[in-house]
Image (tube, rainbow, N blue to C red; front, side, top):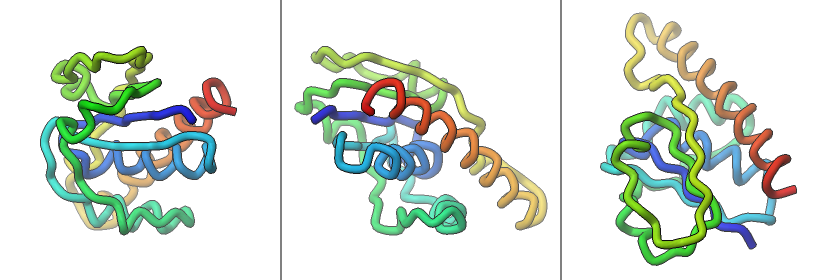
Length: 138
């Protein structure tokens, strides 16, 4: 079974969305982990926006990348430039991939405007994860 790690700065939004979609699209064909170079807790808006799309990430936790140093990952996906720059070397055969998604947690304005930013990023991550699974796991 392939092992995939998704890394972000705080493991609160983008990496959580990606973990949810990778699990959804991979079904039981891969073990999916997410972590941050820091831990900020799972963002309630990330949970809400995923629930809108029928995926429950309310049980996810915010984890630090150091917790996974001993796992031999097949893929390490960084979803923000900060994580890419700070990502440690994993002594494994891991293929490192990167896509810098906008940070919806930095959105400002009304609650509806902020949620719209979350939805836009969710859709970008959903497409990326679907494509990733089709190319590397299916």
